[in-house]
Length: 120
Image 1: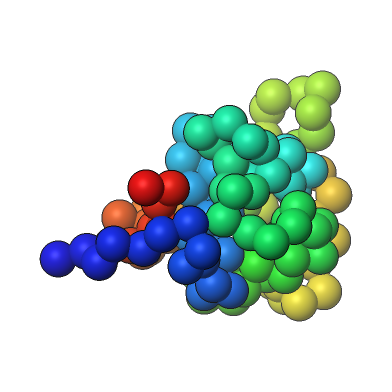
Image 2: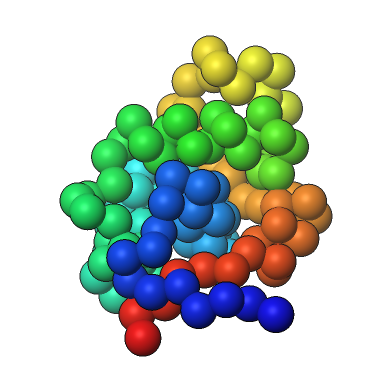
């Protein structure tokens, strides 16, 4: 049974699931993820964080998700919607320019079992 977690209960441990959550509808780039996670709409998680999520926080979280094999990647650019599968060999040194991310099966399983905070 899920516990009731309120608006002030988000922790660093929630960051990976915040990122996976903003990837639930489409492949996204780092810049788009940053915009989505900081959105005040129902897509974002800004209300649960003491300040805007920083690029460094989101990038560090992507590295964590890649290291733990929870994301899949493709390479392409914003102008060309055709993106080729791309394997990240070393998440700690990978440049994320032109990379697009989505949860893989393990990422989806982690997201489904996550107990997110809520505004109520």
